[in-house]
Length: 536
Image (cartoon, rainbow, N blue to C red; front, side, top):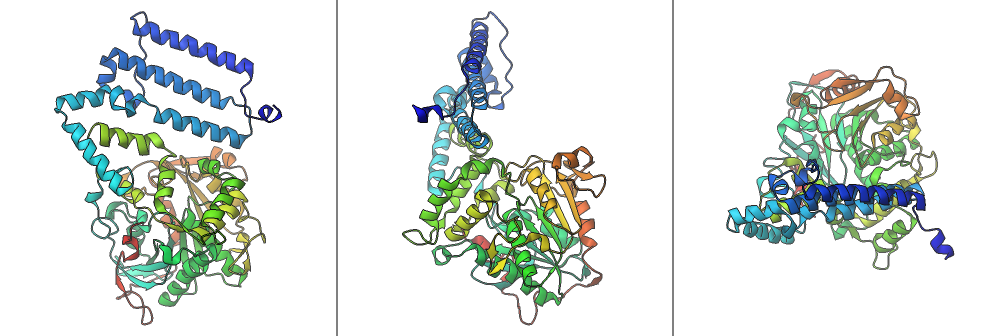
């Protein structure tokens, strides 16, 4: 009974109020179904098709489902518990509510039923074929995967692989301008999924944009790990990954300093590498750009609900260096499934209904093709990352962590920093990205873009979409909301602001190189290289 007393509860008075409100709304729905009141309008796109409205039973069922979902959500909101427990309850309740939608079941979906009748069962036959295809692929298809091929119509910017080791290939892109900036530009993408999120199509490629702006661009293409490298650690990704890439770019270009960019966990790795080098007395970065990157893990967004001491210990016991079977891989499909269920209606059930119940082939969409091209991670690297960042938030604390034999202090990175966050990002909340401004000591610029984790970043100027916010002054108060209150909204892409900032740190122009690499680092193969084509 003492243990029961500490379980999350809803106060009796609140529960009575919720019950009364539920009965009132349920009664109104029932009366409307009997023609004694106005039926509520269909505002949920899952039930927007006319078949839901024209079928009284289906309409009543959909509206009752929405009422039940709202009520369960309100109950989860009113649970008396700590913030993390409440967030976990809300997440679990929402997962159940989304899975239980009548639109997800053929027997309850009048739209899918009508399609089946009108097509004499062809939609069901196609749906079963697509279901079987997805079973063989091991995941729900979000796009027509046959429409894309890496190197053919995604990741097509011309270039050459000029270096490789067991962890990554380094790509140098062919210049698009007769002259380039003296300082080269190195991009470190996330090692979750693949680098070509930055090079999807020519008209939405950040890589091609940077090349066209006159930069000599190098990109890390991480290897998709297999069992031969399952033992790799966070230190390996820093020393043999980011630091090795910096060294090679310095040697090829003949420049002591390079401009650098890190995206998501790639930014975390890059910042760690620069702090390691700073501890060794080196400052190789002329500038650092961080896109939707966490360095202060005090607010991890929705991902925080998956991380606690017990869950990290479980990962360490099954994947880490001291697990009974030795280090193991975290398989890419597990990560992909987790990220999809962060937005289940958009990234799971929408495709279950369309692909299987309606027999509709998913449309060809480059971003979703990339999203499904998952990667593995070495268990030791992943476990270290989980414990020391998401769980213990030690990366931001000067001297707390030792990486590659050096005590880390991110504030010793002595270069201008451009920090970007996306306003609707559920993986790296913009407020969390903004907190990076409090870590560095040198010149800093923070810009917030519209949309989410990926769509906010991949927003080329020519599209004329969305907007971004820039502070009216260079002041960066500790409170992100205080910064936002004084920021100004600008239409269009943030890329133009960043490009002007980057050019100021890129040095004078000089003739573009006539060939990739150097005498020591000769071209190995054309971009995008072999590593990016390896499937998880």
